[in-house]
Each structure stands twice: as C-alpha cells, then as structure tokens.
Length: 245
Image (cartoon, rainbow, N blue to C red):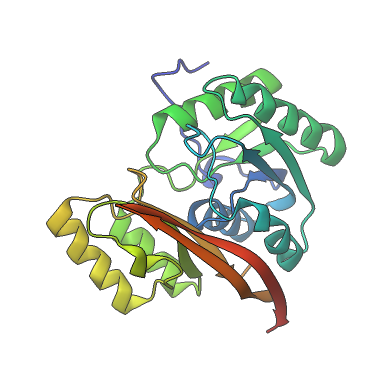
C-alpha cells in the first residue's frame, strides 16, 4: 500500500481485461480526457463521481462551474453520483470514499480513473482509498508532458474553455476563452515569461470541457458571469443548452 509520499502508477495497458470503471469527474480537461482514454482502451465507464466542495481552496477538488457537470454527464449519457463536502483537508477524503463505495455497490465497478497529472497529494490519497476498497486505480495522465498533452487534446477534438485564473500573465480576458492552437501559443508565451505550469498543475487556471468525442451533444453556454479581482477570477456558468452535433 502506498504511503502519502508515494504513488503506484497503473495505466490501462497493465490491465488486459475490460472492466467497469468510475471516473472521478470535475468537468475539466484532465478528468474528461482520462475518461476518454478509459473508453479508448475498451473499458466501460459505468458512472461519474463528482464531489462539490464548499471550500474553493480545497486540496482535492475543482470548484469553478462544478455544478454544471450534470449537463456534461447528460451529454455523455453516463450516470453521475454527486456528493457535497465541506472541503476540509483530509476530512474531505471520507466523503470521497463514501461516494466511491456507493459507486462500487450500485454499479459494480472494479476500478477508479483519475485525471491526476502531477499532484502526489491527490493521487496518493485516491490510491489509498482504492487499495482499502480493493479497486484498481488508473492515472493515465500521470507525469504527461504538458505540450504533448495539449496537442493530444486538440487533435482529438476537445473544446476547452478557461473558467478560473490565478496566475501572473493571465488576466480577466482569459475567462471564458476557448483554447485553440492560437491561444495555446499565447499560453506558451506566458509559460516562458512567468514560469507557469502549462497544464495548470500549479493552480494557474481551471478548465471546463464543452465538447469532446465522449459527448453525444455539444454544450452551449447561454448565460454566465465573470468575477475578477486583482490577479484571480472565475467564469461562472449559469445556464447551458445541449445541442445536437
């Protein structure tokens, strides 16, 4: 069993059999792409699991526009388990484990898929929960090169917008911005100048997926509000429509 300082990394190719899995889902690029990779390797995504944290500074869970994951789940036609948590450090893990237990009981899942890229804190704790519950833990994005990762996202038709910023060089104009090749080049310029992490693993920005190959319908934002103060801000999605592709 891993300690909180280490992580056992499993990728899909290590498991030759097809299994039912649950995806820890925030609606951002990482969890959505991890779900996409699970499906591409033949696994069945039986359910999505979302924790809505009352604490915007949660160590574990994404918060901007998190309430709109229901529309994303609807677009994917995948069941969704939503649980609330106060977002208190370490205590929020109890709420996560309860959600995973519910998923295992109801959907007979055998594995958990995460969008962890570089956070040993997050990945090791999820790994420990999975070990306790005798579930496989998949981290298909672990230590993925950021430039290669963005290239994969764009090549595979992921439409991603920025819903939170908190980094030098990323002002209010980034809120709601779709990341295409042109904007990715601007991100690379900011990375070079301000030393941000291109995959936003330092909390520089939060993302929301409005379309990808997993979606049977595309999300269209009807109403939103921006809040920006000093060097950080959020793009709060208020209303979304689902459009046929």
